Image (cartoon, rainbow, N blue to C red; front, side, top):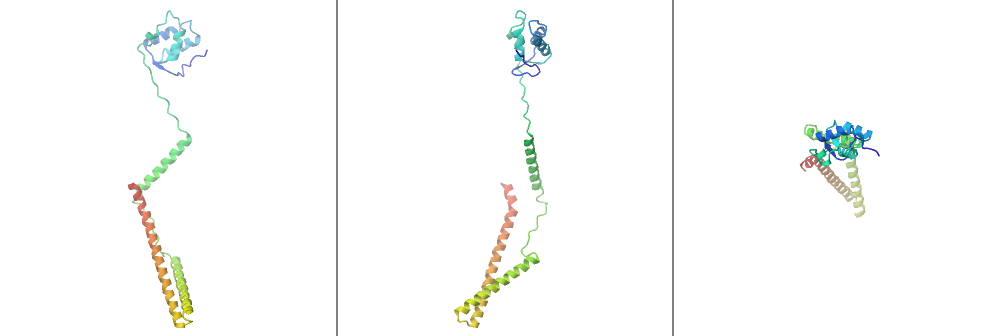
Length: 208
């Protein structure tokens, strides 16, 4: 029958008292015990704690005429509770925690320096020569198209009267210019609203 390993005790642990040490000292020379149990008793007698299973195995195999009763043997001894070993974190979990810590540090740093970091310049409409040229061509094409539509419409309505056809062309040109101006105002207002929303987003999140 295999005996418990004294170097790796399991189960209840008792504090070693003088009565327990005296018993183990006698048991280490008790010929009724196996060599293994006598070796265990010799090893345990110098320790501050004793596994209950080992002590009970030694007591059960020792000479009944010389061994103490169990109540007297355990008198004055207390249970010793050992804290379990902390669970080791896996490498994958360690990497995830490290990444989360880095992300949190970057966010915290961004919060600290957001008031002193220069803001990105907001691009104004038609800030470049290319934008200005493109807008000019677009407006010119729209006005020309409006003139042609108005001219053709009045020409068909008023029996190809040159004066009225020209007046219709001018009216179409003016209407095209008004429509283009209205579209420009709407586009500019939307761009301003988007920029304002981007500016107030960090403050809103912080207040939440």
